[in-house]
Each structure stands twice: as structure tokens, then as C-alpha cells.
Amino acid sequence: MAAEASAVDAAALAARISAAVAQLSGTGHRPRLAGSDDDSSVAGTAGGHVPRPSAVPPATLSPAARGRIIAVWGPAGAPGRTLVAANIAGELAAEGQSVLLVDADSYGASVAALLGLLDEAAGLAQACRLADQGLLDADALLRIATTVATKAGTFRVLTGITRSDRWTELRAAALTLVLERAREIADVTVVDTGFCLEADDELGFDSGAPRRNAATLRSLELADTIFAVGAADSIGVPRLVRGLAELQTAIPQAAPQVVMNKVRTSAVGRSPERQLRAAWERYGPSAPLTAFLPSDPAASDAALLAGALLLESAPESELRRAVAALVCAPAQRNKKSFVFSSTAERRAKG
Image (cartoon, rainbow, N blue to C red):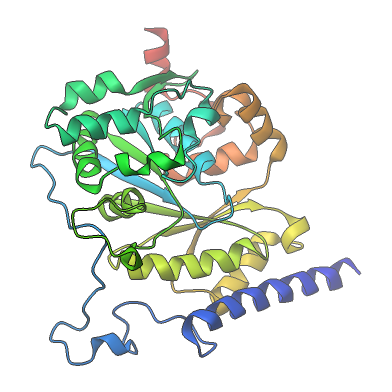
């Protein structure tokens, strides 16, 4: 009976993914991605295809920029973007890297709440304000960012806007300068983005007006690595499929690493990773699945209650290990060195 139930669950999930793909393409096949041979937008163009104009103009990075940017994005429905982004920042700090965590979600900023920080003043809004005034340099950004110390290392945070109606403070040009400065002060900048990728074209703003989703779009445009996070269930997976198609349209150069979060047998069936991979390979978009993060509500709830990261509240949990495996070197993922990397341990002793 269990095997039959598992087969039914897998078939239902595959049907949901197939239906999502059918809605996108109108044919039941894989959605056509920008630049594909069957995309009608390429007809009559010399270079193959003309990408859809972005909501914000392209940025030019400073020659002094050296750090890399990781953007964590996911579709609507709370797939776990903030949990993943914050814990990625913590794991990289535990490796001994200098890390800046930026909350660029213009709809529901929650990094401060997750880390137990006071959020009266939005660090990112302050940085954007100085950028608009031409006063933002590396030292100013360091002063604005909040320092978070963990058992394994230290990183800095630019908290998000405290009310969603303050989204106008996150202008694309200002955020571009903030991220340029972030590259100068941190080895890695981790950006927790919003879910929405709409370009606001229908609002009829002129080119100088702020855009609600500019913070998310600009962060994704500038990112060196994009993690696309989706919930591993019959609702979250189709949402992720549709979201990835929207991401490809909005940011044609994006090559996201797809992460399935909250993986559990009760939502997918027996051998959930195998079931998800099989359904994705058969019906999903071209972007392959990169990682599976197990559902661990006990560890997640304990971390949220304590305002701490998983490496502090549940260092031996499978969820913590899976997040660390996304970004850390093999030596860091060794069980004996999981809580402290050698560099971080020296920092803690110092």
C-alpha cells in the first residue's frame, strides 16, 4: 500500500509540474526560454534574439570591485528565501570569509526578525540615501551595517525596510552603488531578494520614477550566483517552474542554481529526492536541480525562536549541513570541523 501511495504522490507531482509548463508554453512542452531556437522573438534579428528591456538600466562595476554577490530568490509563497540567505551568510562567515548580508525584499523584509535584530532603522535604506547624496563610500557602508557575531564567525547585515510602503527608498541607481561598495568591503555579499519580477511597465511611469521591483531585479542582474529556492510540494514546485520562466524573461543572462527546500516524504512520497528529480527531468524547465534541503521544522523553529542561525541552535541538523554544502568547501562540511573552521576558530579565540 505504501508503494502504491508513493506512486500516486509522484504522479500527482509530475502532473502539477506538467500543467505549470503547459500554462507557460501553451503547448504542453517545455517553456520556451529566451534565445531558444523556437522563440518567435528571434525572427529577423541579426544576433539571434533581442532580450526584453529590463526595468532598470545596466550597471558598470567599479574597477576596484573584488567581492562576489550571491542572490537568493524564490517565487511567492514563502519557499524559505530568508532562511537560506541568512544561513548561507553564516556558513561563509564560519569559513573565515568577510560577509555582508543585504535584505533587499521590498515586500516583506524579515532578515532582522530572523536574526533577532532591532529593525527601527533600515540599514539598506540608509545606505541608499547616502548613495543618492553621493556620500556612500566603503567606510560609510561599514558604519551603517550591523555586526552579527556567531559562535563560528562574524558578518555584517544591512537590514531591510521596516514597512512595505517605503519601497521607493530602494532606487535602482542607489542600490547599484551600494552593491558596488559591498564588493569592496566583503568577500561575499548575500542578497535576500523579493519574489516579484514584474517590470512595472503597466504603471506608465516615466524613466526616472522608482519601480517597486527594482531592488530585486537589480540584485539579480548584478549577482554572480543566483540560488532559486522553491518549496518541495505540489504547490511550490509549479510556482517555481513558472517563476523560473519569468526570471529567464526578466534577466536573460541568469543561470540560477535551483534549490528544493522543505523536502519531506509526507508531501512528495517515499524517496522524495528521487521523486522530485525524476519529475523535474521529465516535465520541468531546463535548469537542473542543484540541491535538496530537508524539512526540519524543529531546527528551524528553534533557530527562529532564539533569533539565531542553524549553526548556533542546531549545528548537527541535516538542514544545517545541507545549507552549508551549498556554498562551503568540502573540508568545512567535514563533521569534525562543522561548527568551527580553522580561520573562524582563530578569530573567536582572538
